[in-house]
Length: 251
Image (cartoon, rainbow, N blue to C red; front, side, top):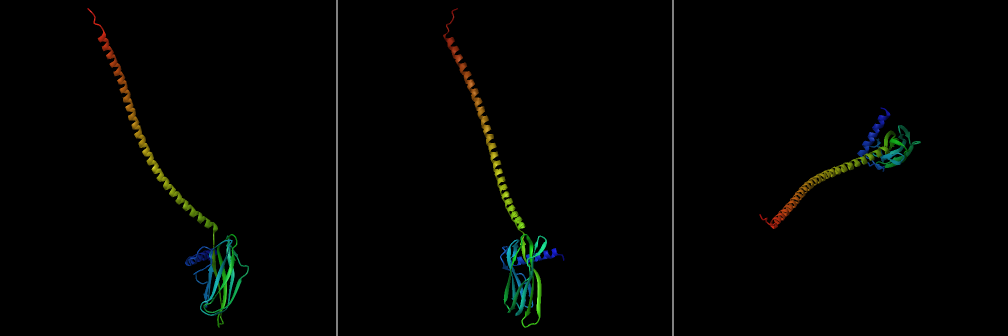
């Protein structure tokens, strides 16, 4: 199995663990509900981690070492290595292993082993840890040993996060544009209705103007007829008076 497939499986496993424990993305250390890193011959080691971190940041992880099923002696926990990636290059964050000589633990007792991790700038993908643990069951002669590698945290891709934020803003803007377009369509409908009413009013005004022009024409004709009738009447009266005053001729 190549390194890329292993890395992908580890990331998927970490994502599953993070959902199962309902962890937040706030980079605040919380105890998770993932299975123990080590659970063998009375010893149990569990991980407390923030899970989601940023590059160029500092965070703490805690390993809880517990005598879960027996009294234990000579417990030694060693953080062998902590690794991450710079682009595609895997790098180590420890100059030398970190050793925690715990000693003895009675049944049900535990001890915390904490380490501070500083990520370099441009670190990416994931933070991995590797631990070794040795112990004895009290009054036993057998020396137990376990070594395991596990994911500590996923490094948040800032650019991807910004892209997601921009996508959210774009959706909001698209919704705003859709709302404005709907309002514009409604305004256009009302404007068209207003234009129709204006055209109807203009048509009525034109009809009224035509009727008024017709009335004015009729009035002008009546005035002309009245003048003609007046002149005719005046001539008739003048002719009548003239004939009445005219002396009769003697034959």
